[in-house]
Amino acid sequence: MRRIIVAIDGYSSCGKSTIAKELAAYAGYTYVDTGAMYRAVALYVLRAGVEVSDEEAIKQMLPEIEIGFVRTADGQHVCLNGEDVEKHIRTLEVGNMASQVSTLGVVRRFLVEQQQAMGREKGIVMDGRDIGTVVFPKAELKLFLTASAEVRAQRRYLELQEKGEKPVFEDVLRDVNERDYRDTHRQESPLRQAADAIVVDNSEMTREEQMAHVKQLFADACSD
Ligand code: DC
Image (cartoon, rainbow, N blue to C red; front, side):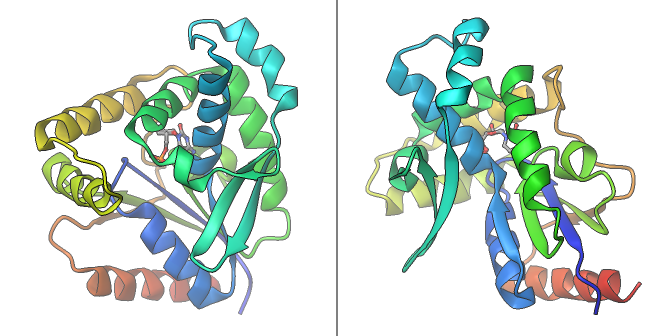
């Protein structure tokens, strides 16, 4: 079977990373969570106390930022300049900042270049917002995942509770809606479905149903 690039895009909290991780493990491919890369940049900017409106200051900082991934007992973690920052990047605050820094062209170019380099050998499953449209427009399999805002907010709410946070559902839903708006309306690489992407709406699907569907799409793409 030929090795391919799988590009998975979609709204926040619609289960992209769950599907992408599981598919990568199944296929023996490398998994790359590009949202984690934007979150790592956001964490760096937050720690430096720089305003997101100060694009020039952020541009100056980019060469100081090195992002990597490490495998740990509980899955892949993102590293920022050698520090495992996985638990720091999954908060609402960093998520919001990531959504804002990801509107900046300099940040996108900085990360897209690294993402494209990771796909040179193929055998990769990458998830994000612009993977099928900008990073790998020639990916052999493009999936566009979606679910209703309420379903996604409910999932996010439970995730935050599991992490020991005390979220308010209305805040999480508002956050999901605001992020959707920003992700789809920004000037630089807005979230949109590639013309040749396959839409997977998982509002009413179990994880197992969805995975079976995705594995079938993957098998079809590999044998094309
Ligand atoms: O998928 P996530 O929630 O971890 O992503 C965090 C933010 O990063 C999200 O608001 C959109 C942005 N992002 C992006 O603009 N492009 C990507 N390829 C991945 C994420």
